[in-house]
Image (tube, rainbow, N blue to C red; front, side, top):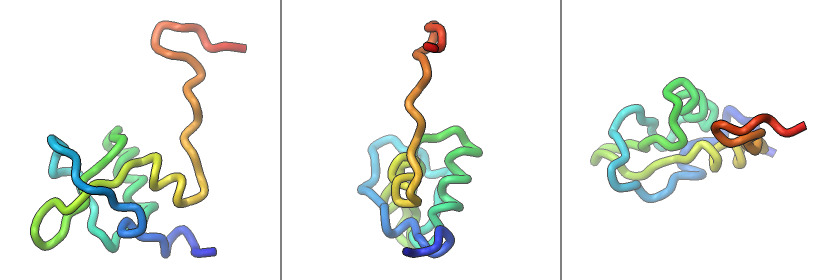
Length: 85
């Protein structure tokens, strides 16, 4: 099994999404942990992946976490609802 540091953005990159901002962005050979940190710091579900020719794709938080063996928790409640016991 690969160490988390050796897993790269290139392993989970998707085609670009229309309207996705150019920043923040990661490169194809950046680590997945770096991409996850950047998404969390910027409160984003996906960020751009840049290359020599500009934006070449995107990476989603859910995909990156899954590739690292993690998953997003299900929401405890939707906005305005009480947390269920």
